[in-house]
Amino acid sequence: MVALFHNAGEAPRLRIVRQLPLFATLSRRELRVVDSLLHERRYLKGEIVFDAGEHGQALYVIVAGRVLICRQGEPDTGRIAELEAGVVFGELALLDNAPRAAQARAAEDCVLASLSRADFESLLDTHAIAASKIALQLARQLGRQLREQNAARPEG
Amino acid sequence: MTSNADDDGSSRYVSTGPFVWVATLAVTTLLLVLLKQALWLVVPFLVAVVVYYALFPPVHRLMLAGVPRSTAASLVAGAFVVVAVLALVPAVSWTAAHAVSGQEAFYRYLDAGRVLIDKTLAMLEARFGFLERMHFHEQVGRRMAEFGETNLQKQLTAALLGAAAWLPSLLLAPFFAFFFLRDGQRFLKFLGAAVPNAYFERTLYMLERFDTTARAYFHGLLKLTAIDTVCMSVGLWVIGVPGAAVLGLATAVLSWVPVVGPIVGGILVILVTATDFPDQPQLVYAAIALLAAMRLLDDFVFLPLTVGRSLRMHPLPTVLLIFVGGAVAGVPGLILALPLAGLVMVIAGTIGGVLDDPRLRARHAFAKRLRAERITADLGAND
Image 1 (cartoon, rainbow over the protein chains, first blue to last red):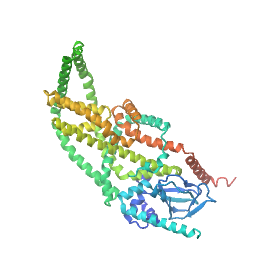
Image 2: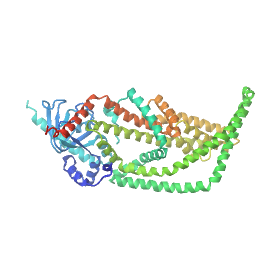
Image 3: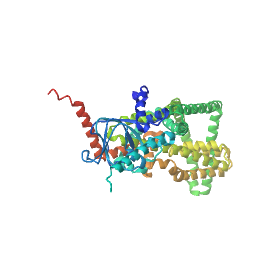
Image 4: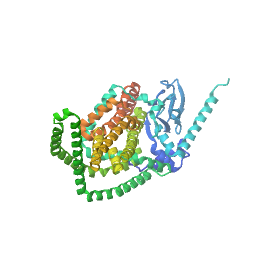
C-alpha cells in the first residue's frame, strides 16, 4: 500500500525510461505522464510473456534483459528474433487489434515496461503530441524491421 | 480509457455462461448485505463516484491543455467545492428560515392529497353503484386515517432521523472524489502490479471494462436525469403547475431509486398540483397522465438508451436483481443493485474466462515453478 503513495525515487526510473528509444523524443513533462502509465513487469528466464493467437492488450519495452520471439511452443527450432534492452515488442496488437503473431518468452531474467492499449488510446486523447511522438517511434521501428526482413529474404 | 474493448475480439476472454450469472447474482446479493451494514460509508462513496465521473471531463480538458493530472484534479475539485458551498449556504439558510412554514406546507399538501382522494372516491361511487354498495369511499377513508396515524408518522420520523445521521458522512464525498481524480491511475497501476504475469493482460482488459462499464453507467444516469428533468419540467410548465423546474428535477433525481423513486416523485407532483389547484381535478389528472407517459418513455426509450446500454444485461436478471436488492438492503439496495451487478459481472466474467483457459493457468503454474526453483536452487547444495 505504501508503494501507492510513494513518489520518492522517481527520478532514477525516469532516467531509465528516457533511455528507451520509444520514449527518447519525449519532453520531461511528457515523460512523466507516460511513466505514470507504464507497468513494470519482471520475468524469469523461460517465462512466457504472451502466446501466439492471444488478443494483446499491451505493448512491451525491454528495460533490461533479452526476450525471445518464436513460433508458438518452438523456442529452439522456431526462433524469429532475440530482442535486447530498449526494443519494443507486441506493438502490432496495439495498432491493428490483431491476435499476437508469435510467442514471446524471456530469454533471460528481464524487466519489461508495459503500456496498455487503453492507456495508449487515452494518451492519444489527453496528450496527443506525446502519443504521436511514441507512434512515430513505433513506425520507425516497424520500418526498420521491414527493411531487415526484406534484406534477409533470398533474391529471386 | 476511451476504447471499446469488445470491438477487438478480446470479449471472447470473458465468460458469460451460467457460472458467471449465478456468481454475479450471489456475489451482488452478498455485497448488498455487507454494504447495508456500512451505509454511512457506501452512500458518500457512491456520491463520490458520481461526482468523479461528472468532474472527469473538465479534468480531462485541463490535461489536454497540458496541465498535470494532480494539478488538474486539485483545480477542478477545488472549484466544485467552492460552487457546492456557494449553493449550499443560501439553501441551508433558506431551509432554516422556512422550517416552520415548510412543516405547515407539508401538512397542507397532505391535506390537499386527502381531499383529492376523497373527491375521486366520491366521483367513482357516484358513477359505479357497486362501489357505493360496498361503502368503498368510507372503507378507504378509514384505512387511510389509520395508516396516517400509525405508519406515516413513524416512517417519516425514522426517515428524517436516518437522513440526519447520513448528512455528516456526505462531507466525505468530495474528499473521496478528489482522490479518485488525482490517484485513480496510480491505484490501477498498484492493482496491476499485484497480479501474476500470466494474468496481467487479462487484468488490464478487466480494468478497462470495469472503468468503461462504471463510466457508461454513471454518465448514463446523469444524462437520464437531465433528460427526465427537461421533459418533466416542460410537461408540468405546459399544464401550468408552479415550480415546474424544481419538481422536474426532484422527480428525476428520485428516479435514481428504482420502483420506489418514481412512485414518491409521482406522489409529490400530484400533491403539489392538488394543493395549488384544489378546484381543478382535471389538472391533477393531466399531471397523472404526464407521469404515466414519462414512466413509459423512461422505461422503453430513455433508460435503454442511457443506463441500459452501459450494463448490457437481459431484462429478466435486471428485474430480479432490483427486487433482490430491495429485499436485502431496502432503498439503498434498490439503488445499488444494478451498478453493483454490472461491475461484479465484469469481474466474474474475467475470472470465468481465466478458469475456462487451461493454457493460462498452466503458464501461471510454470512461472510459479520457475520462481520456486530459483528460490530453492542453493538449498540442496549441502546435501
